[in-house]
Length: 317
Image 1 (cartoon, helix red, strand yellow):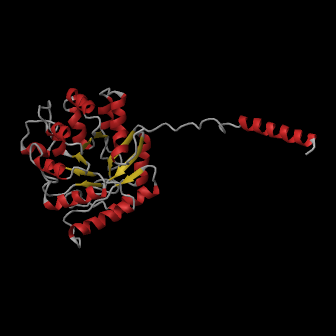
Image 2: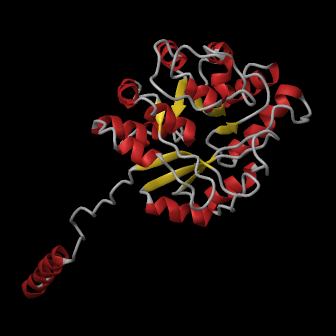
Image 3: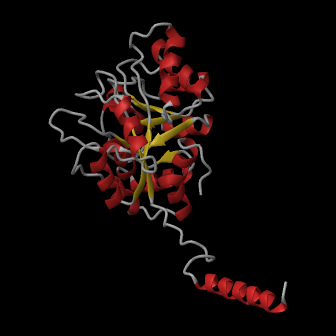
């Protein structure tokens, strides 16, 4: 090749390369989007209770953007005791498919449902939902004792499918006794199933000294020693807490000194949630948790890290 041609090509290449270096962002690190503050493990789309306004997926997205929520878990409600209008699994799956970066769908089936084939039938139904993208089971809100054989059958299937189960507990749904012996029976029987606790009966058990009536409402005043939640979390690595709804916020705000210490002590077991289910609904969690001045590492785990690890199956960033 003639020297002049070689020189021309060499000069042109150098000029082109130098020009590329000046293109904005071509070789520089792309700016990273700021991670949103929260992953909300407890929301519902549709119309949950008669008198409520319908919450559409788009309405939920608008609310999420206003409150710095990156992702929300969409929970069906399929038991007659769980809501005025059943919220089926299919709309949750459809919304998560339409907005995969924002929504995570769970699935649900009432354990009293007529299913051909017993346990295998339940396995087939729930696996079909998992194959369509469901990341967990719940909200499990059923008018049976927590360790009723039909309930235990569902836990067995979820353990086999390796999906977490988010349950509601009070004196009508997922029923237990002070000290939560029925829940403990399930935790011991299915040690590889991650249970996520929610509801008045669960959160009342942050305190000791309870009678049966206390599992059905929102207790006030100082938390007493020997609460079942602390005891179970110390003994069983497969129990977590969903801080949503009035029951979750009340469990912390009723005794903020204990609540702050509890959140720090159990920071690996707690997940932020709201139970947001209709437009304009007040959500006390934001103000309550911000007022505690939690360490950043604790906030990161509770607000998003634990959900990332347990529900999404990803390493917490």
